[in-house]
Amino acid sequence: MAPERFIGTRRSLRSVGLLLLTAGLSWGCTTGAYRAPEAPTPEQIPSLEREAAAGPTDVDVLVRLGAAYRAAGRLDDARRVLQQALRVDKSSAEATSVLGMVYDESGADSSAVDLYQKYLAEHPDGPLAKDLRERLALVRRRALQASVKESLAREAQLASTPPQPRTVGVFPFAYQGPDQRLEPLGRALAEMITTDLSQTNRLKVVERLRVQLLLNEMALSAQQRVQPATAARSGHLLGAARIVQGVLDGDENDLLMQAVVVPVTGDSASMGEPLSAHDPARRFFDMEKRIVLGLYQDMGIELTPAEREAVLHRPTDNLNALLAFGLGLEAQDAGQFQQAAAHFTQAATLDPGFTSAAAAAQAAQGLNVAQNLDIGSMVQTGLADVGAANTAYDQWVARVTSFTDLEGLLPGILSRDPVPELLGKEGLSGTGASVEIIITRPGGGQ
Image 1 (cartoon, rainbow, N blue to C red):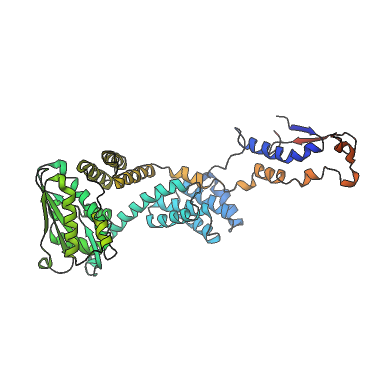
Image 2: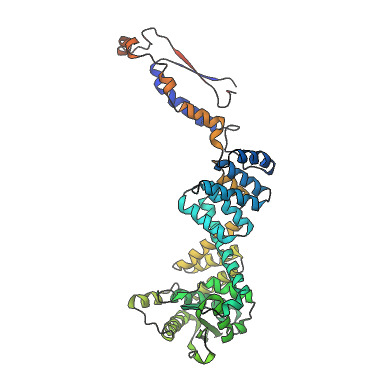
């Protein structure tokens, strides 16, 4: 394609810079024009290694080499050079994100969490922010599961370690009645009690998911979960001084709710009497509040008026919404995030005021998206600016955005004839001459 031409007089030259910049940006958006460099491939490793050897502090080269190693499946090498890049420039967004993704792929979840959090703290609106926020929730979940497995592997050591005082974990309630439709209430009840026991800073409540993951790893039956020995063993693994266990029995017309606080140290004689509430299922929420207030009393905690008001808050009064919420928890605990999102959405639809269900639906959908994110595409996004500064397009833009050369085309004040300008006529020193500007396309004018 022939070079573009602009012919104009001295006055027109004042807008030449804007014209050039607009043309350059327009070309950058056309098909076949400048695009951000593709993520490096394994075939580029030898040349990138030579560049890194020649410039060991060139962060862009190190990041691209790390990405090439990652593409080749050489995750150890990728970690090594990306860590080197962060030592050179700890604020590098590209090194931070790509190293985090390498940790993510290699199963080093805690390290991935740290780097994802660092990126989001420093670049909350960065090109990877949305994907990393969703991925972060998934990797945190994996890190929690790895922590639970590590606790089981260290059970002998943890059994001799005193649990943290004022720390409590809540087991899912075991449903022992004839109506299996009510079974999801056991998990939903554990979530409600966990939330209500978190309303005071005088207790530290173990995250419900952590408790559930531990019980899943221990592969205990519902009957085993309500035994005091199970509570003592689990309490040591969770670092909790007390465990709340309970059962649900009966049907919709006559439902029994029982709970007990089991101290992790000591014998079963130190347990208090089980707390009981007996009512039709439609009064489930009244029963739960009576049980929670009894648990506080058994643990010797007198609530302040503000704490009591927070504990008595009801997230929903709709039993069917709570059942759908319980089904969502079951699906999410099993890693079935799309199904969990559907159940949580159903709960929020049944009761639009059930805000925690709506939040859970959004979180589950995010986990489902994160589970299906392609790390390779994320690396490409993270490398969007790496190495781009040396392209012909960027060099060209750097030149045309400086108007010094254009200004040099204008005659000085002493050599100009102001009369034609005052009369509205064009001309350079009264000659009427024109200046021809030839604009070549970046990279060679083709």
